[in-house]
Length: 367
Image (cartoon, rainbow, N blue to C red; front, side):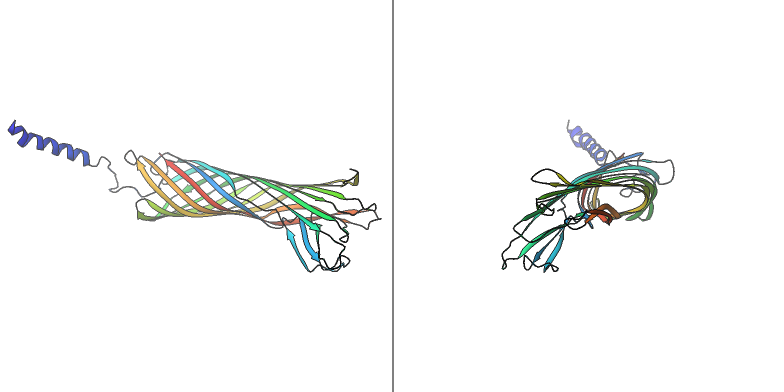
């Protein structure tokens, strides 16, 4: 027993300790693989991300509000500014799945983005016949009509806007290493986009007809763009060498061709009687259009591995921006004519850029 304690047990314990701490993973290239290789380490990689974004839209005004120095003065106002809906932060999702091809560092990837957002805002103007009191006023923008600013009347304008965005990408990519700490992943492919926005405005208590009855003026605008085109981009990663942390920066650009469908309708109704003072007017315009989409993102990620580095998990957080030049196209109508004359609705075009900016949080699994 003493010999066993003296020789056998230390030998057995040493064997167990060597077995416990002996590396069980071997690499044919002599060192552990660099971070985020994906296509060379496994056959499949999947990703899920939560997007928290806020829209920015040019030329989405629904009214102009200002102040007259005197209720009987019709000169340009002392102060005036245009009103737009108040945009808000909303959630979206992005998911992709990729597969490594039996080629050197090549991979194919399918990704999808869904985002829905909405905005609203309403304002009120006050009129007064008192000489020493300023008069605020409201002029409808998308459906202008004659308005008498004098008198004790309240003018109201309200707007509601929503936007649905769907983006589907298919691209082919290849990883290129500059060193163990930095790599780039150029990619190219195809993009399909579905974009649809609605913009509804209501103007009420406008005393603008021969019988001086209050009016309600409703407008309904929509913009639909379904498009297909090419996409190109580049993803970058810089390994910090600090416990699996890295910086990433991605950029892509696409040129899309598709059908742009514009719809616009409005109705002017007497509030007291419900009689339509101006018959409902509708406008449709179908165009073949070409537009661009740009996207950029940067942030930080952390990677770890399981099962002898056969499974990798990447957790990331970043800041993203999407830019859609000239995506906001709406059809408006200016109503011209004096009180006792027939009114004419003259169409005009509203154009502006659209964008999204905000945060992304997600995880990628490589196996």
